Image (cartoon, rainbow, N blue to C red; front, top):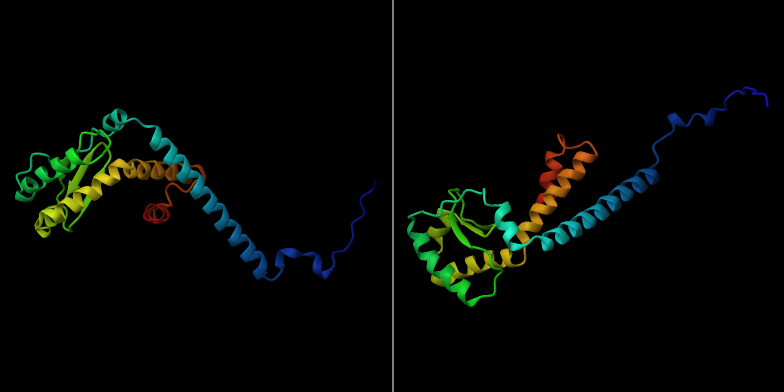
Length: 182
């Protein structure tokens, strides 16, 4: 078969066509759908992995986290007996739950993998009642019991890996921060 060149018609050059809003919306919807599906798959995978990690392994994996257990802050002296009573009466995974003082400016409490419960000095100063402290500590124990800390770490690692695979590991800091926030 012989090639016969033909002159191009005016509409044959599609590289200079006008933007099509339908094509744009279709592509945007597809990208959102793909990211949403990826979000669900990675989240489900992280939850499965977190459920498979034993309590002993979790403690060993996160033994490197520094915490100030020996703090002489008066609020810590008040929080320790409340935590002990919660651990005796509540049903919590058998982790070595430890209180740690984290010097941050804003009042906060957080569960840290491996059994740590971090409290800030400003939180200890703001919470005056025993019931309020029990509420804060019970909330953090709930995070440990339902493995929220491990699931969060797993999701963060999987998203970091996924971003590295697509080549956005160095430029995806704002995207990663947004995903962690979500």
